[in-house]
Image 1 (cartoon, rainbow, N blue to C red):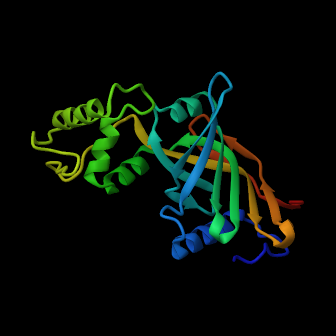
Image 2 (spheres, rainbow, N blue to C red; image 1 turned 90 degrees about the horizontal axis):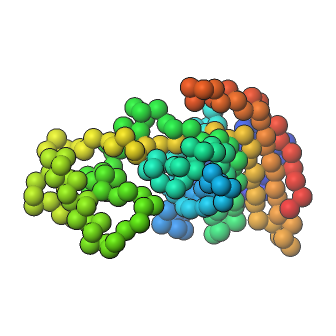
Length: 226
């Protein structure tokens, strides 16, 4: 198990989150230790949650990065209301992290670089799926994906198991990319004996400019009753 939170509390909670994620990855108790639940609110006020993969942590500035289809339900929700909440839970370690923040699209070059690092089949999948849209059948989705691959220059013989782009990589579709979740609050939770858990919350002022540039303030920490 992980030690309880120190006294005094760390100035920056992202340092602890980074250490916990590294420990969870090292111990490999679950296939995707970077699995992260993201909650959004649709334009009509309906909440929605799903699990994504946390792909980057920027400790000094205080944001998390995940990638998705911008035209998906979560993408449309973020466009209408960029306030999101995220949660990472490592049951085997007795740890949980909750984040409240503002999601903004990642810079294009950042999304391009990550997309290029994906295997070609995953690159094709980003082109093939109109995420969250109705689907007649799985066979129709596969046919649609392969047809779009041919439009991108893939050979007729391409299958989902074997995707070989002529230049080694497919271009990133404009509808697919990253989000930076700039944290304005974070809670860290450690499992404690007799259910007397260790819990603390950090908050900071956060302003997002019209160009999606963030202006975060200093963190303030407070222990909370569990």
